[in-house]
Amino acid sequence: MGELNYHHLRYFRAVAHDGNLTRTAEKLNVTQSALSVQIRQLEARLGHDLFERRGRQLHLTEAGRIALDHADAIFGVGEELVATLARRGGTQQALRIGAQSTLSRNFQMGFLRPVLGRGDVEIVLRSGSGRELLDALHALSLDVVLTNAPPAGESPLLIHKIADQTVSLFGTPARVAHGSLRDVLMAEPVILPTESSIRTGFDSLVARLEVRPRIAAEVDDMAMVRLLAREDAGLAVVPAVVLADELGAGLLAEAPFPLGISEPFYAVTVERRFPNPLVQALIDASRPAEAGILGG
Image (cartoon, rainbow, N blue to C red; front, side, top):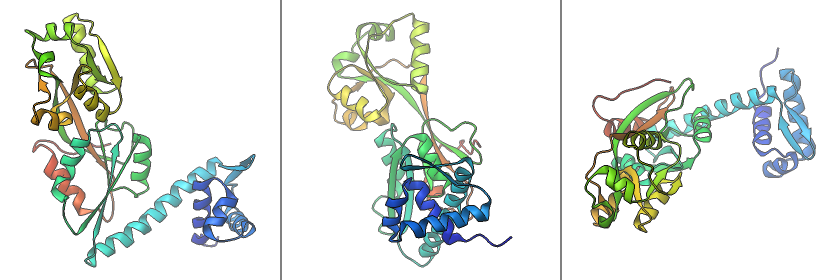
């Protein structure tokens, strides 16, 4: 069998990500017929159809999905090679970070703080869902993914626990002025994150206290939790890092009642031949001394 033609593979990858042959041909500045020939030659070489047409759109077959996964990995390694050798040549070093879209912005800033202001580092920060960020990590287009929910059943991944922050009740001083935790939960509305370790812990807490709290809002974005707390919509159930600026300015206060809830934070990476040295330095600077790699 002849060797794989990577020119064909590059064209296939472009069409697969775009889903439209005509549009991809225009972007690549080639004719549609020439692009079709390249893909047919790749299909002949692999012995499988890579696309099926539905209306005007092209959809990957099962073989096409497998081919795309490999193509992304192949060209991702190539991009990593160029970036790595460019770094060693003394040029600006890129740090590509993916952050779960619901993650606290203050936490992200804390993670990045050791490299902020460095003239030799370019920070590329991308937010999104856990799934799309992990796909980008596997494709080597991200160096690390920050999340508060460690991916389950993913392999091969390295999961580094970098923080475990205490969760409390935060609100305006008038809202936290109660005699006990049960009193405050019975009297004041709460602002809760949706599905998370915080929500699970809070549900267990109110069940033990036999309290049915009044929920002012349920949101999946810590930035919105912060805004609602500032607008005095209720008591926010979050780690202090989410409201650091408001607490520092005296706009909000912490209720003096421990909840017994904490939120973990993780940095997720993959094994690489040429790892970005900035990533390990940031992980080491962020996590507690006893934390380590959890595996994945």
